[in-house]
Image (tube, rainbow, N blue to C red; front, top):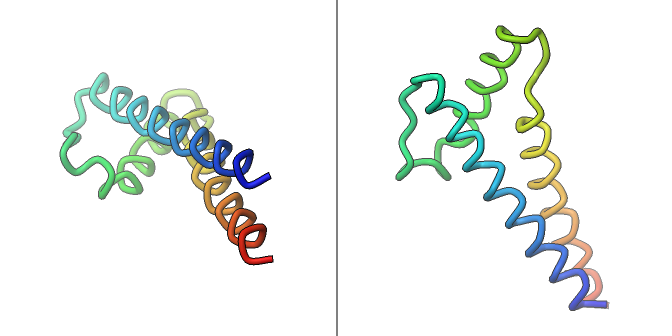
Length: 88
């Protein structure tokens, strides 16, 4: 069971990293200044910019915003599950 949860955590982390890079690419496509070196530190700022831009363009928040939120929250939830399995 521990291996399954650990694999799920790794999959969610990978999903989050891919979505982060896609947000980076979407902002660069729109000629916004985005630092690749500071990407992991400033991702919340970049997500807010992405959300605002996609709302202005289409009237709806872009799908990458929600994918980032779901993936990072799944990592935290699965980490708690893994800790509970490990210590029970």
